Length: 73
Image (cartoon, rainbow, N blue to C red; front, side, top):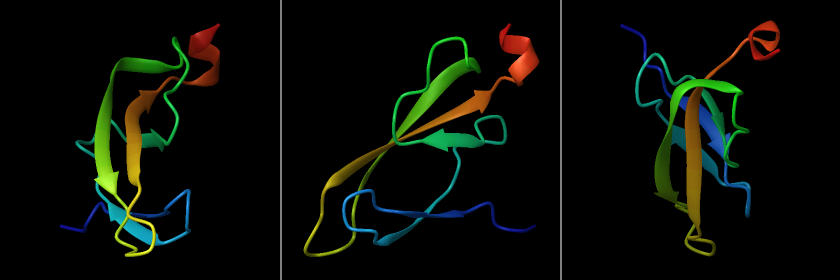
């Protein structure tokens, strides 16, 4: 089975981060909380810390199941 890890960048220092979605439903992600009525069910927060020794800032990733555009209307 293939890995579902994603490669993202630290928003503060651009250090590469490998993250994994919490499950198949929560596949969309953002570093800002998504707008209400733009996702199914709930939002899962994943708290990380940058691995860059000069940065080490906390990062929160919000995982959600995005609604289709026409379902939001």
